[in-house]
Image 1 (cartoon, rainbow, N blue to C red):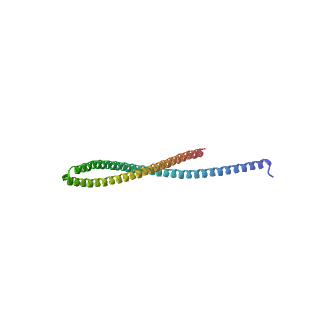
Image 2 (cartoon, rainbow, N blue to C red):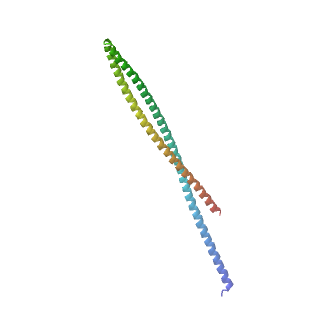
Image 3 (spheres, helix red, strand yellow):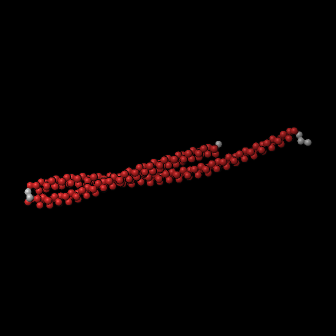
Length: 194
């Protein structure tokens, strides 16, 4: 027949074994959870690093596109200035030829003998005026094309600026994700040492 003291000792040993097994199970589950958290953290760090590299590449491409757009804008502005200068020169020459035409008409009224020479001079002046008018029209068209090119360059510059802003935003987000991952890793280490 078992005494009460012997029965109590047996019960205590069973309780201690149950507590020890439960502690081991909890420790195993904690280690598994920490291991899974470390794998997730590694994936987040890899993804944030890749996103940061992609953002850097996008920012470089955007800067290159912006540089090309600024160069095109400068070329368009230079072409516009040249077209305006050519237009001013044709207008000045047209004014001079108009004055010559007036003088030819005056010479025609002064003498019948000079009439033939004045008519020929007027014909030449009219031809030159027509040529200069054509040149002025060409300069005007070149000015319009230069203006359109400058507008396109301005639009390309704006698009390049938007792309650079988006790339910078993506870079900032990737940097923040990398920082968050570092904080999570520090937390995991603290849990491991706890």
